[in-house]
Length: 174
Length: 138
Image (cartoon, rainbow over all chains, first blue to last red; front, side):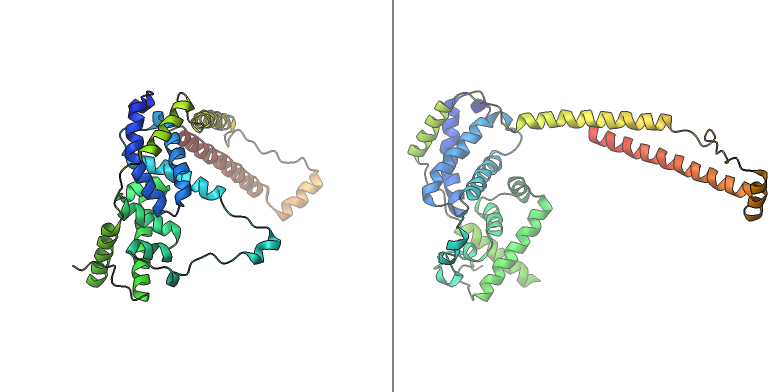
């Protein structure tokens, strides 16, 4: 990143190539449609490029990059918030999928269909990206203790949902 | 308890193993973003950095101001001994009548105590302001 901050475009290309699959998976897991992921990737990379000078080499790079990407994604979510005139509100069909209508092929899909988005995001950062609670705290702007508590609750909620649905096929046998 | 721990471990293992693996980088996307960066021009300072730096200076200036005001209040606060309480001038007849109701030394002492309490409160307030000002500076 120091080379990027110095204006080295080859260094930036290396970082962009390393980040592309990561961000693609991150955006995909957090519900960004395929058509918008390219824009979000470009916007994230552009911000990373402009912020390269403020990067602290003592800190791990990936959580920092995902923090920037997450903010870009949140801005995108905010900007696309659908608004419908009050007169037409009655004609809007219910688009929320019921858990039973979703054919979950793995535990992540099961979790996404049943847990709130914020809870799912924490689970993904912890078990999908393999981040430590302190890194998740930095990415999501919480404290480490708060993240640990939320992760505990998320696991409990997932276990409860699986028990309620009688779902055992996702659990690995020991 | 062991069962709960066991379930937690199984859920964690399932989540880790079911996480989709990374695919190869899309070179077209990487090329596109590199081109966009090349046309974006030289790096600029983060827009948020400048106000942040300005805020820091403003906070320091405000802390200095509070500190100076606190010191001024502390210096100007009169000590209890200098704050003499003057009794209102009353007529002799009224004074005698008043003496029947309340004794003058008691009233004087209570007023002195009030003045001393007020002075102490001012001193405490000044110390608290100074402490906050130092914590802002640090």
